[in-house]
Length: 160
Image 1 (cartoon, helix red, strand yellow):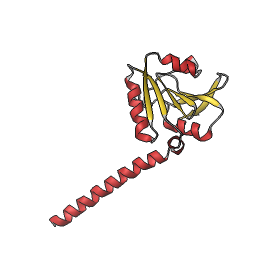
Image 2: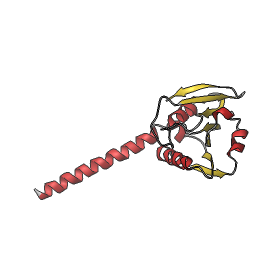
Image 3: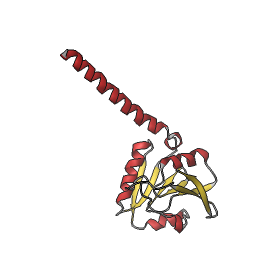
Image 4: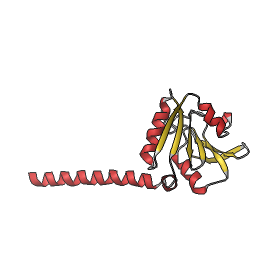
């Protein structure tokens, strides 16, 4: 009886490990367009922003490309360079696949952006919404992500 308990426990542990590994690999594979991006993902953040670190951990846990983080004195410089409207700005800016991604945007929106490759500058989720990736608290309502056109105008890209 002792031997079968040990074998049963080993089987249960192996199953739990297999489920964990499958969940992690299927999570990465669900972001195929992000994982296939040519080059690195760059995140520009304020040196004093703690939520940006949490967003970085979120992204690193879900995608495979190399993420380079740049602590910057003036985050507005990168926002200005990419033409991010002030009313859509947040605490950090990501550059991926030739687009900007402003703020705590869920990776599902980044995946859609890279998969569809619209003729825009990038996407943004303004502010620091509660419950968004990298932000504490509960999610209240939809996260609205905006597409910023090449002329600087913007419209809704998607809701999550």
